[in-house]
Image 1 (cartoon, rainbow, N blue to C red):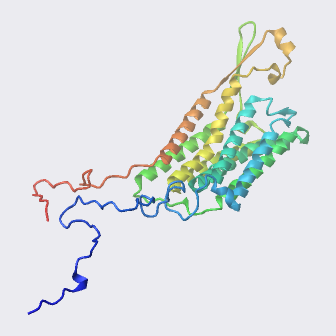
Image 2 (image 1 turned 90 degrees about the vertical axis):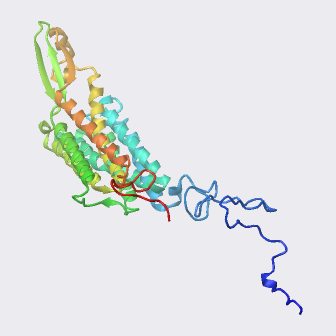
Length: 379
């Protein structure tokens, strides 16, 4: 009896493709005639040199915002505002004096301009940096509104003859930077303040600390910071304080109060912002102008005191043997402590918190054995 021919489909191939042995876990594919194709190390990743993370085709650019009209327009507005601000440093600002000639007033304005310029760079960088730049510039613009209004209030209360071209350029620069920050802020609305749940204890504590630091900063911003001591040749001394926000003309006081209200409001909103790290950037934009005011006060201490500040001439002061010295009141140092606390709250918000580990779990992911219970491992 003849044997039936074998089924061709069940016959082994002449050149079988190597495969993994059935009972081995150390199998490696056999080397083929061609080298392995270069490709991404994980699904959805870009090949080397084309960016980071999953994305479509195209080469990654370090400045993606330059290809979009929205971020580019916002950055141009911010850059225009910075240029106007820099130009406003040199002409007369108030009462015929320029900002460049007065280091006490120059330092805060330089800090504002640096932050706005940095925000423009972040906006055209794209990605999360674009949102960070928008929030940083927006926080800066909101709080500095009061400072610029207080400068304008000096003109409103004292007369138009006090207005200099430097103040006009400074106001134009603030308007341009504010317009750029608002335009950049409106490009994306996925993040926003969120209502806190009572069970989020860490978020409630963070909100409380940030709000208290902002309120303390606002309260201690109003009293006098500057302390002056006048000493006569006979040894008699007299101490004076200056800088109380509520002792200024009404228009100037309105600007100072606007600073305090804006600071507290922005910090509370920043503490409610989600993602919380973006809220920290918004808080930084509001806190930096207050840091600038502290730096300005420290610079003023190093400046010589003129007798004209007290309504007498230098010749009269020399004839009477008067000497003048300047210092800072204790309220200023309390203000600095609150500003530091505000910055620490922002740092706490910016640093990602480590999620709490699951109860009863080991570092390796295996559940911990319950005491008194036998635990077996196997099928």
